[in-house]
Each structure stands twice: as structure tokens, then as C-alpha cells.
Length: 109
Image 1 (tube, rainbow, N blue to C red):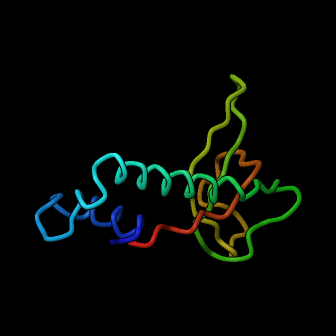
Image 2 (cartoon, rainbow, N blue to C red):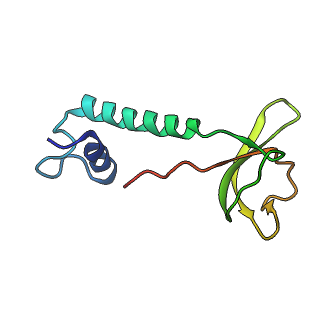
């Protein structure tokens, strides 16, 4: 029997059930459960990262980061943008970015 991660990968990348051990080996309910467990782990991993106030620290590498700033209606505008070490700023220079965090690790496919 394949692992839940292998089943998830197969379910995402195949045409379900067209080979000798496909999507139906665990059954639809179990395969969907495996997908949900994988998604939950990804969300949990992303949430473990903490927002860093710009006033406390700035990124140490040219890379993409999640950033945010408060909007007048009380919500937060959150998006991904690059940071430039040479210019010591995020690419979205006309926004009043107040916090940043590293991107989560992408999934293995």
C-alpha cells in the first residue's frame, strides 16, 4: 500500500484509477482524508512563521516575502513581493508595509 503522501500526489497528478494501484486503492474517503491532512499540515507550517515588524528587522536576502499593512477599514492587506538588499526596500515602495515574513516551504511534488 502506498503512503498518504504518495496517494495525494497521485490523485493530483493523474487521471484517477487508470493504473494498477491508483486513487481507489485507499478508497475515495481515505484519499480525500489524506488530502485534507496534507493541507492542514501546510497551513499549520505556514502559521508557525511569525510576522516581523519592519521597525524590528528587515530581510537579510534578496527574495520574495509575505508582507502586510493595515488598511483604513481595519483589515490587513497581505501580499507577496520581493525585497532588494541593494535598495533596502520591498519592491512595492509606495505602500506603507509594516510587517513581513518568509514564504512557507513549497510542497514536494
